[in-house]
Image 1 (tube, rainbow, N blue to C red):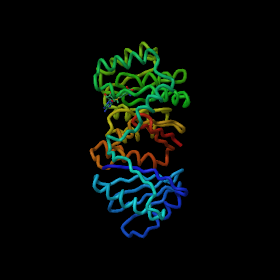
Image 2: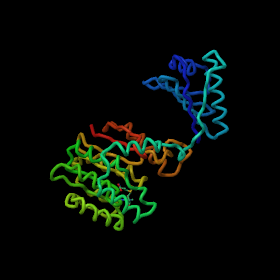
Image 3: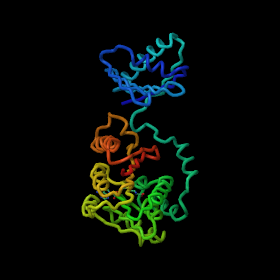
Image 4: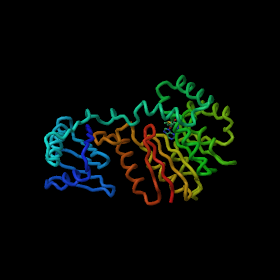
Length: 314
Ligand SMILES: C[S@@+](CC[C@H](N)C(=O)[O-])C[C@H]1O[C@@H](n2cnc3c(N)ncnc32)[C@H](O)[C@@H]1O
């Protein structure tokens, strides 16, 4: 399902938005958000209007031909609102799901250069993971996410941490390094092979005595935990279809003020594109909506790497 955007330099963006949404199209549904954005859904597709310094417009339709029609309609209406055929409107090339660039590589590189980066041990782990696991190495979190996990663990004063999805141990080291004195990390994974690398690096990082590795389906490990809310921080980074079950088991055991962090909530852009309807796309889309509406939690979704959500128990 292709998307295209246009940034239209008009003196009063909100006025154009008002004129466009006031049009009497009985087949269109208009939704206004409290911050002034509006979404118009019609048979042609969906259009989001964002009044900022200019009027930002997002257009989305079932296919490229339908999108071109929607762009034409919007261009006509906007020029009518402006009273001028000369109003400049330039639409970006359509992009869909996985072609969407979540983080521009240049920005991504800049972010990596401006965080507490990987130290030499984590650097060695990055290289060793690439050599031992090949393309699976892409599952490893990046250094900026790792720095963020250490920071969040410290800020939470965490003594009881949980990780779902260890792989070769990068994120476990980052969490373990942030634990308060006497703190412990319960680390869940199904792979003996990958976690054997993790064990070696935990030893070298001097955090092995803080980590309890449980090999087996994480849902069983989580369900076997005591029911009382003791978890200070949890990181979910494993099989996507099980995320909702992990989230529920963790949130019910999270102390007030405790954090749950979920990785890959954008699924490489596919979560934003309704054309992607495989199980993990549907599950992640529903979970993102559920967390936003979860009255037990405050949450924020960040465009860091493949998207992370941080939710804090009220
Ligand atoms: C994306 S990787 C984790 C990356 C890791 N956080 C890091 O920083 O390198 C996902 C991990 O989840 C594990 N996994 C997959 N299904 C699982 C399950 N049902 N229970 C526990 N772990 C699982 C995989 O073995 C894999 O190591």
